[in-house]
Length: 639
Picture 1 (cartoon, rainbow, N blue to C red):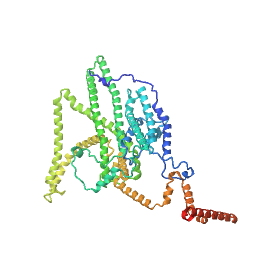
Picture 2: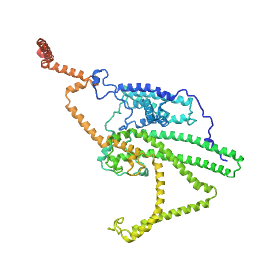
Picture 3: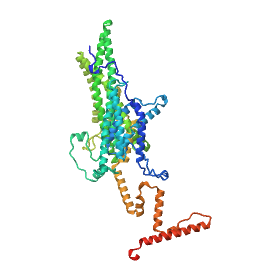
């Protein structure tokens, strides 16, 4: 009798406990400080384009600008910081899969809207972490970001210590869910401390700020320079030739790094939860085996003992196959996550040089609106595809593993090796004969039914028919046999599609549908739209060209700028357009008093009032002119 392994054993007690802090309730209340932090950062952010509202409220001075959490299009700095910021929300992403944040009382027809509300709430609660990393006010952002991140870390730690159990997966459910996020929160707190110390040193003059934002990133400028140089052949090792070659002139955007980190953390959580679920299922199977063993003395049926043995073998096979395929599916999925980055770089470089032949014809001119929507949903869909792709691939691998065990391992274990070898020999011989007949058709067609080469140096014969009558007889007799052979080919096609489809479902960078039906693959559509947006917004040649235009335009405006513009701009954004206009008018009239007389007068019905205004202006002009003459008079003239 084989018993369930001890490391798989679980007690009946689920370890229920009462947590000191309800983290889901804390998420609701965290919206209050989150909104306050967003308002503070928005107040410190100045708008580049002013409105009429700024002229009425001069004290704002263009404040309350739009705060962004992350530039998902063209950010190439602090990529790993944003990657760990994505990792900090891994537990919330997994909770969204469980519909944990679905508001109560939502009808079934409005579940999509309820899930949208829950997703917005989760996004708003973690918004300050990203906003504090992207704000230009680094001192304020580092302090508020550290305090907000520390609050989340403290709440999560208290909940884990007080109650690590869960209602769904049992022991250490919350530890499984929260350890990646806690690791990322610790990294982010250290990062905020580093930013605070760095900018305090810059403020005190002990350090120089060298992280100014540049329109043209350095690596893109180096890429353009490399295009003007003659290519140099470099010796590459086996790893660089076959797997990955590092390119110093290419950087993955923060979106790709963040998606990769989030996918790895979510995959780790998903595998842990899958292992916990399998423990429950395996406990039920082994418990059923023990009950059957206890009932065996009371049952007189002779085949019952054989049923117990078969059930025991099934449990052993399922446990072994599940363990093996878990490591295999995990390794394949991790390789997919890394390979997606490789394919991203390969596709981007092809688009940069104008090569679109690797794309289907329908996707060579995509819709701009679809592309912009695609880049907004890429990261989320990539994580979902990775998780579901792993699960489907793991299930298919388990099924094939069980087929392998029952077809090969158990017959050998039961002493049926000769029968197994006999069956394998017959099967292999049948397949070999069928394949040899297919190959013979190729050889006969190439030898007897194609005309000779036009030039002796040609690699193949021309596609020109020869020996027509013999070919028609050959085609007629093989027609009946190829009907039978086609059935086997159809089964082979079905198995190949099943295997490749289950193995490649996590690959969002390629379509698993046939040519002509790629538009039905929503994941592939998202990938195509995403790379097109990156191509149009981060193409090194295009960005370099725009940088040259902006530089030339700025130099031209600087040369043509009069002194009054310099005086006008010295006030900065603190003054309104109306105030600047009045000040410039006063400055002009002060230097040219005679213009006071020529100023346009308001329409007045009374002639006496117009005369009074004119005399007043004459008096003002005379006084100012005398004052200017005395001011510019030299000391010798006064003597």
